[in-house]
Image 1 (spheres, rainbow, N blue to C red):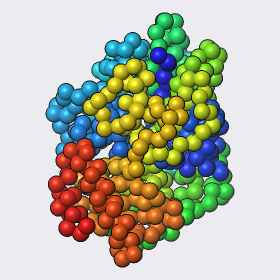
Image 2: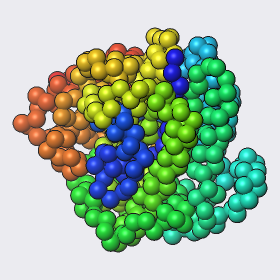
Image 3: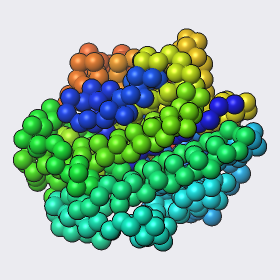
Image 4: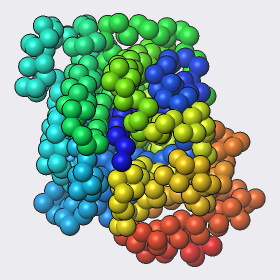
Length: 478
């Protein structure tokens, strides 16, 4: 069995990574992992929301099955005592196979209270976790003679300061070591050292809180990017004509400050976001370098991924995530550096999902995860053909208010079933930024019918609770 390290970011847009095509944002350490590993171009989150995605990462199940369909801490219906009961999670399998389990960072899975409750050693506070105010972070600052940085906030997506400042952008006036990212890197290195002293393999997950808002790079990274050199998004001029009405609701009423800001404002927000990304990339470099120093790098499988993407100003100033199933939100980075750097520098274009990771972990541990909706990536990592997927589904159940959506990717198309709104169809080869909704085009009727057919098959395969409703909506038109 091999050591495994998962480096998970929170809400990272694919276009913020050099090896995925960013010409501005610098991510040399993530790019180095891609050069030594396999880069997946068609990796998708099962749900573009933190708690559902992270619960799926634990179980390999779609949200309708594990039950955590909304974020914990919201005022939407959420019954922690009723969800997650009787579900198998990969940490149990890894532990039974002899792995040491380590965790550092954001938890927010919903179905299990904390990383410790799931069997991990390390730091994984309940729910979202507020590292800034935790006793562990305070002790870390004292032990390392670090001054607590001051948060300098410059932008509010809601148009005014809100409790918690989760919708803000700015920077912290302090050293990178004195940020939560620096703390998590230090904790990760401590756990690697602890595990390497025992003659058993280890599984380590480091889950950064960034670059999720508030975008707060440390002083050394805050001005790394000149806003004037960041070009306007191709979709920034989108008037949302022929789009679902819910897109306008999110843009205009949920985050009015973001929607009313011009590109001069947004380019500075993006520059802070990019600075945050580069700061986390720097921390990833420290972790990787420590593995090299310990002579563990070559024998460790390293996975880099994000729980979901980020709008960061697309389509006229959209902020955060929600019922806008754009690629920037659902298409996530996934890089796997295998033991021995097998297939280094290769690219895989199969449809894969974060749902596949628990099955992959169990497979690497010599076990299986038969209840999973995912597929092990091990055959792909070994270069044994494709995974056989012709299409892939994701779900959304709402954020801030209930919204039901199902997304299907097939060939070059993406179909979005909006249960109470206008559906969407995009040709991703011709329309990368999803400006032209083809759902009403008569010449696309055969493609639409095929997408509907494949979506219903996908929902039936996993016993989707909304399957009957989807069939009622779609079959009459096929």
